[in-house]
Length: 253
Image (cartoon, rainbow, N blue to C red; front, side):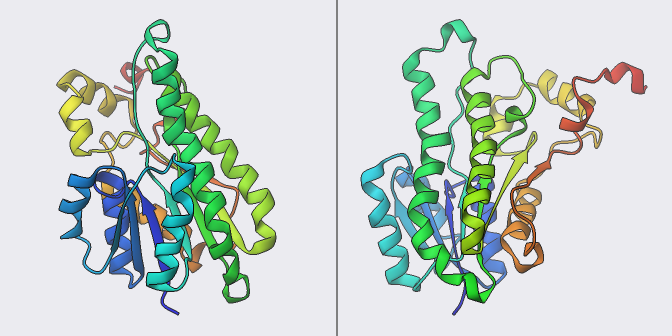
């Protein structure tokens, strides 16, 4: 059976690059994204992919998502939980509504999608197993200003990944997380001022942002047979950003 991957939030950015990487490797690809217009645009870049418009935080949609995938491709071998939202602001200005919006997509969505995928993923234990990769963030490892909801949600995703690995290993389902550092996405470049870009470059040992393709490479690796004995791990793809702590760039001059 040709392998199948489901990538959420794949209408743009890291998710789209990841979906393209799976297609390049000869996999079937299914995409779930809440943004219908962007999903339509992405369709042209993902020939043969199953494009599903929907909200990963809506429990009522879970059965439909996976029924469509099973009907189209016959099974599922990898789930990439990439869908997420960012809401940056001071703690005192973060309303509970804003807090819940972030948690619903970034955390609840990962839980719901992973739980619903188990019945398809566990079928492949005898054939080498299956994989779940959750997209966390360096913001889940190191605190920063204005990220009370976002950073907390991503820290929770990292712990959820460990819980998944502990429980789902007996089904041959490997569960890992990827923590992107600053990535040169269109959205990031639209909101990052030159001062922010310069500060990131100074704080990152490799002195640059990562690319969407570099993240896609890491995600695909964790879903592939090359990572057949890796589970319960967090892979930071960040140019060394997390490892340097707060750092003092001036001392490196």
